Image 1 (tube, rainbow over the protein chains, first blue to last red):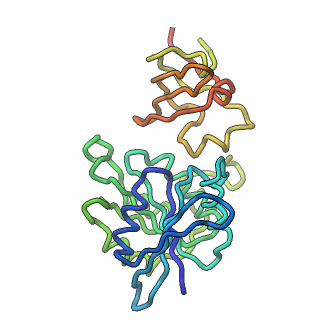
Image 2: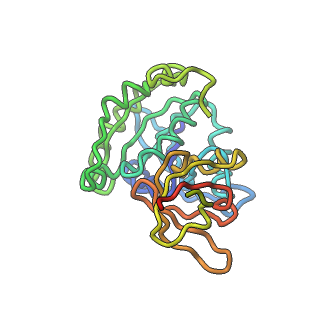
Amino acid sequence: MRKILLMGQANVGKSVIFNRLAGAHVTESNYSGTTVDFAKGRMRLDHEDVEIIDVPGTFSLEPKDRAEKVAVKMLDEEKDVLVVCIIDSSKIERGLYLALEIIEKGYPVVIALNMWDVANGGNIKINAKKLEQILGVPVVPTVATRGEGLKELVLKMKKTAPAEIEKIMEKVGMKSGTHN
Amino acid sequence: MEKKLSQMKYEEKGRIKKIDQSLRTQIAGMGIREGKEVEMMTKQPIKGPVVVNVDRSNTSIGLGLADKILVEVEG
């Protein structure tokens, strides 16, 4: 069965999106060898049952605690997965850091700019279309608590493919090998 | 004036000048990098963490890390 990993930093709404997508088909699991729980569920994508996993929140792919270790390990172990990277739109910079790390590893990614309403209320304007052009992966504004944007998020999951980090760097005017 | 992030006072503002190489990747995911503006929100006693505001969100940083971050403050 194909797998979808929901990844993002802590408190960006991963679990809300997970519950919306997986509905009632949820089982709680304990990742072997740790005390960190994650939840697994199922959803339909393109007339196919897929497994959807709510990965523990992580700031980056360089783990600093056990929950983050689990998150990174889950990503490394699964090669044929789609990653939905969830970002708190009001804290977009640090969210993009994680998103770029995942893209750089070669996974197909869809970005959910969650808490879109909070960002707009705080006068943060984000050009999602432009971001999509730069990153080469779908970017969908969402308000998970109200279910807004989730339909489009699922539609975009069918269409995403890995993006090349070199191309992204070209578009923002960076040369390969100069970033740190 | 230049000081360590750990030496900033409550409500003091500054701009991050230098981050020790050893922890650059460790805190980049928290939105903290050179050139960012920071404001000290809280300091916890008994060598507890400091809480700084970066990009309108509060982030707590261990005192050990805050010791290795140099900040340019006004005045």
